[in-house]
Image 1 (cartoon, helix red, strand yellow):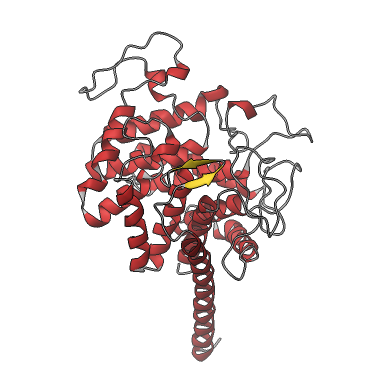
Image 2: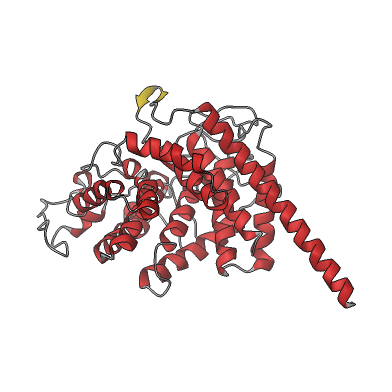
Length: 393
């Protein structure tokens, strides 16, 4: 090929990438604008069956996505919307600093991101107090013997370690809370946050229900109720798409906070690669993933799990951890699938509502409105913004 031909080809490829990036960003903006338009006041509680404060986990996941969008589309209105929400909740975990529920702690991911961006310690201190409380508090529901509590001022927990770490009894919790610990470690340099999080993670991975990670295929059971002998109606195991998507997001978001040379990073990276291969093998021909990853039960398109898998695969490709010849087509198919869920006004179809397994929130459709729209939008924004970054690689 002549030099002119090479330059023409390079120009064509660059133009195609710019068009693709523009398209991806427009879809993300459209989905986000829909949400901000429909939930104009971020302080208003949700009211699905009962009133809940807007700092609950569903809304917290939305802000994870919004902060990701801000990285590639730095509009001040995104920060204003976030700060109005965080200030209203006094930058405090839902249900206060003494909560040990991962769902309550999810909002702290955004609180700590805003602390890093502003240096305002009011956005930091309540979360640190909350984590310090949890690190010395056993989970009473998992007590097998009378707990001997550690000294709150000690550098290492001294007793009853099993119950201190037995908090994340469902895999969603890993995404909701583990990144908060790793953010706290990166901000403060205090290794206790990292080490405690890793011990809680290992308890979920290896011990909860006999271990929620299936090392044979890299997939995670949602909680102890779904570990075999539980089966779907077709006789297959039940691996819930969004649940495994939460683990994908957790691993990515934690590794982003850790030095690559640390043992914890390498441990999480190993599990990430195992999960990515398991996820890859479950993708549908149309680019989506079923709500139940290896089962035909409730088979069909599902947006939230697909978005989270696109997030993880795109990140892994950008880091050079996943082979492009194998995983880039997976990411491209996932994006092409997600293009089809966005309505003209930004509403996202094929979104499974809240729950814990494939049958919840069924039947799905392009038009059905889920019980909560916030976490699905957040997952979608995470997936599309990471794919946007991949197009620049």
